[in-house]
Image (cartoon, rainbow, N blue to C red; front, side, top):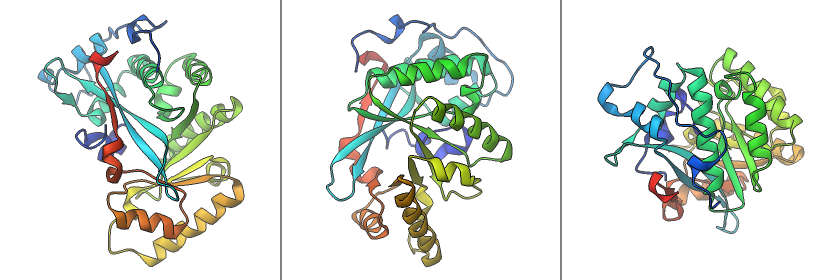
Length: 281
């Protein structure tokens, strides 16, 4: 799961989460972003984000998604990383928050990130995060994202966020509709997150339900767990698969097993994280 301001926990934990032959810069349409928006800037000038964008110093952290019953890694989620020239990471949540103020640059950056994530994927099934504000951020952007993901030569699952506010939910619905029309499977991210807005339409048609990490902390809430069990049961009837995020201990993994959740991801599997830096391309 990865998004801008509303997705700080995973993306901000740069130290926790960490394909093709052509270098990213040689791929069609992958120009170094040249825009310099000066408004809504949550970053200080010395944070180096503009230099990162102009030189495309992007990386990826691939977090494994593990089958609970076998312990086997069956997929990875790709998380964006922004590397300064001195090797330091700019928190991705802050970078995306800044990019939201520059829609054209946001689209261009997201396309470059997705090319890199697809190019360097460590396995055949890859979950990628797609923000509705980039998908709908410019004329023709939706078609570019769909074409890129559809021809990737991988089993790509798009993680869609529909739990921010009413306006975001509408935009996410538009994106989900476009993905479905293109035959691209999608995962409904952060199910159960505080303040979430999730429509019946999205629940009914999601290929994956990814339960928010807020379910994991102890003490366990019996009523909350009962709701999760009901949603897992619903997923079985609709053909969707359930994933528990934020799994950090063996006890968390056992909880997933007890709830009937088929897949898990989190720091418990940190030895399987795969990181790709900007110099690895």
